[in-house]
Length: 399
Image 1 (cartoon, rainbow, N blue to C red):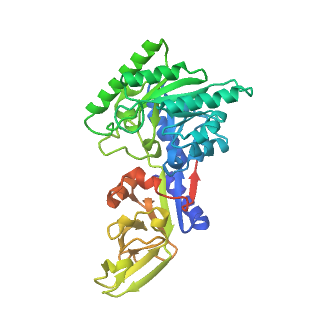
Image 2 (image 1 turned 135 degrees about the horizontal axis):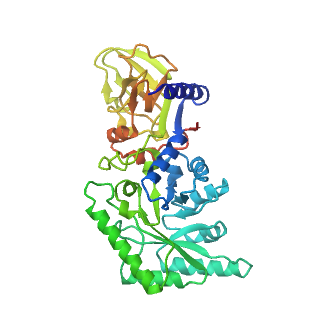
Image 3 (image 1 turned 180 degrees about the vertical axis):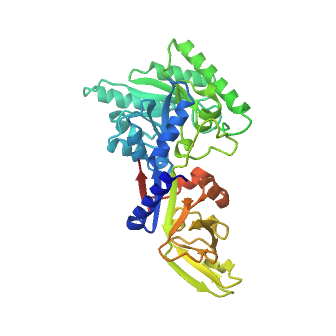
């Protein structure tokens, strides 16, 4: 770390110790902004970006991130998974477009229309019910259209129309509706984060051919074509189209180990910290935590950390994970409990009660990444980030 990082880290530590001693997730908004700009630098200047901030911004905090990105011209808008997530953004003053990537249930159609939230559409009943709700609003003086994005299934077998005759008929129907405006059409890659990109590129070509077909058949140009996810932004330039969707990489996490990191500079944006609650010395032969899955084989100095799987810290780290204290590794002993776990500080004699514990991030010159923690716990990095629940306070850092 350079001197600026060291000073910032000391200030952060002081803030956490005073306000959030039990546990705190430190979110570096500058790093997120830098990651977005770095990705945009890898695109054509006219290519717009969607910031994917579903699941509360992958656990990082959707509202603070969206508010920060509102002034970035290249950001078209945001993507969420549910109408509730979209409305949290609207209720907090976010005005850019919001696209819901999954299925939206009919109970929320009035809310969507009133707040100009874009649903993904792929079922005829969606079109009919959205048209019906819009017609009722038109009778009360509303004179807009419901903007939608058509989901096309090329890879995932999840949601979306197939790129075939039936899918083309659905697109034609959507384009014919009086109160519906087809603003976009999109697909999602299942294998863009692999070394062999043959599958992703072939699915991009299928998607592009389908768009060409439906636009020709309907004598139109759908304004926004998009298919590129985080991995594609980095390594499939031909998938840019009109817009790309930045997800995991905006948070400084790798899509996978197979995605190169030399083309786009991505920096971590998350630190997870706690403090030692208690230190005790125990002799050999003492079982630790539930089930006694670890028994000391020598006199051991143990520290209790007041964090557990109730916070989203993985129970699967039991007996194999570690934390950093004074820049040194402290192995986890026994099972991680709901609210606490124990670590071995026998080799860290300077460790004292109330000292800082690094679960993710820097401690002195040592670092534990979310990728490493994911590997140790049998999860992948952004699953781990999403599982850090609201009981963990977030401390947002800028400047």
